[in-house]
Image (cartoon, rainbow, N blue to C red; front, top):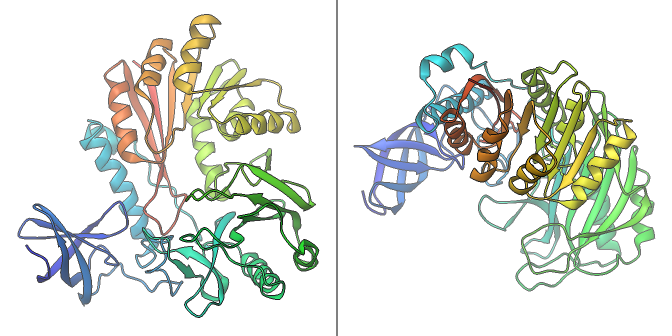
Amino acid sequence: MKKNDVVTVEVTDIGIGGEGIGKVDGYTLFIKDAVIGDTVEVKVMKAKKNYGYARLMRIVKESAFRVSARCPEARRCGGCQIQEMDYRKQLEFKNTKVRNNLIRLGSVEEELLDQIMEPIAGMEEPFRYRNKAQFPIGVDKEGNLIAGFYAGRTHQIIPVPDRDCVLGIPENKVILDQILDYMREEKISAYDEERHKGLVRHVLVRYGFTTKEIMVCLIINGDKLPSSEKLLEKLTKIPGMTSITYNINKEKTNVIMGSKVCPLWGQTYITDYIGNVKYQISPLSFYQVNPVQTEVLYGTALEYAGLTGKETVWDVYCGIGTISLFLAQKAQKVYGVEIVPQAIEDAKHNAEINEITNAEFFVGKAEEVLPQTYECEHIHADIIVVDPPRKGCDESLLACITQMQPKRVVYVSCDPATLARDLKYLEERDYKVKEVQCVDMFGHSVHVETVVLLERK
């Protein structure tokens, strides 16, 4: 296969970036905007030895699983990679992806998975589920102010159609309209990433699905927001508005948020609930973006932990204590570990506002804190819960877990490949996979969360 070849191919799988995968005489092609079941004519744009990248020219035969995207910019925008695939097929694809990773990379027996793997937990309505949105602000070719999302693998801003993303809350449109009006009226510039000039970089919106509280934070390339009273006149009229702040980020960087948040109006946080647990969420807090499925995810982790009220639990990579406080409702004692100091401050505060006294939190790298407290302070663990970043657990942490010999390990994962790798390590050291449950947290994207229960043999 070489560049500019035109071939017809049937799409049989989806890649990690949402691209369709098909084979021509054993040669693998990755095709953006193709879905499983499509037969497509494509043009090869880049050819490697064993695989290549191709552009979709036309759909020869439409897949039975192809649907019309609800958003007209779904193909260009980087947020929804598979919105043109039927939602039930999306769930099947995600479940299969996790299953195949566990078999191929984790050496989990296929027959065992047939017995222990639950059907994926999907959403009844996989739209309007996001409680957080970060909109880059820029200008189009005519110099008009725009708000949107970045196109896939680029920093080109795709304007949100009518400023209303179908994964987010309807209030986002009203908020963006008011902010862009304020910027036009007060002649406030949008940030230009290449020249590192201009003021407003991003708009962050957070929403409490239970409390209906709204937060708006403008990320700016400067020290203050001019004529801020004009902005407040517009935003404070929106029902549910609770917190208006700005965040200073003067670095030439792709990182969205700076470290300093300045209040403009109201509180510097909103509150929301997962189950019975209340959380205060600041602009800088990590908090799951899909509250409906987060309750399913944490409920599964709690169920797998099998708590009776007598157990000591370690929650590793605990963030602002979301899982820790969920577990503390039924455990004797919970210890949380997180590397980000601000997150631990939030975790302690969240424990306080819920009157939870049996949770204690440590700042530091999990692979350092856990062995240190185990060896020096002799704190044992009946159950260890891990919810690591995409790269999975550090091997020294896994070694410490096996040394501490908890009865159960509950592994919450956002990456099936690193999950499978870590499960293999634990299986080789006296732990057995007992339960597997996938949870669809991010409908219309390729991402999937998985909860696994391991028991000591």
